Image 1: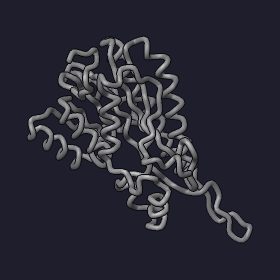
Image 2: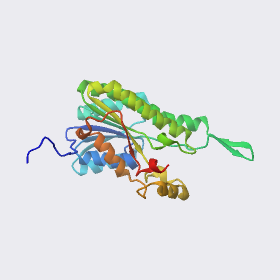
Image 3: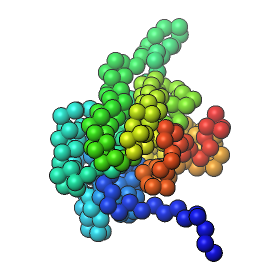
Image 4: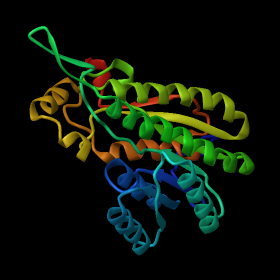
Length: 266
């Protein structure tokens, strides 16, 4: 039987992907998934031991990977890493803005009618610098490369908490909401250049970041998730992989929630 339809295939051979926060958790799973699909991978992180070990693992398995110590809040470090990546691989096709941190605290904490605690400016600024400014710097530094190529895929890490808020996460929610806004702006600005820009909004994923949360909170999240479990890093990596592929070439400016239906249960 002949048909116009071609089955979807995730094939990234000859593509080069930069993954920020790529040494552990979701970033690690993403690096492995992209390498398995044939992409050369530049792992950007500040955790040297884990990053180097991951690059070695990918290379030993027949893939191509390099680890670079990069602080995404530093324009000079990011631009140097872009130059190094281009020297090594010749191009950059995919940027996964995955790096992120949390510094949770209530806006103000009240006890017996008195303010006994609050989110510090340092906590607020630290999260904005990595989660928001870092996405801006990395995208602004790599977008010109993609424009020259006439091709690019930019994928930003948002969060379901950007869609409905979350107690004690003023700073984190602010950054992830802003990332969604920037995603939509860049989709308009860069789409005509052959570059798509999308965001993935993970639910609660079993990583080091969430394992530090109280058991009762994690249990409540699972209870509210229709599929009845926390997500695994590979669930988000698979979404990144799809949006970075040709199969998603007509998807631009969207926010893909990967949360097991958590938003439905809020």
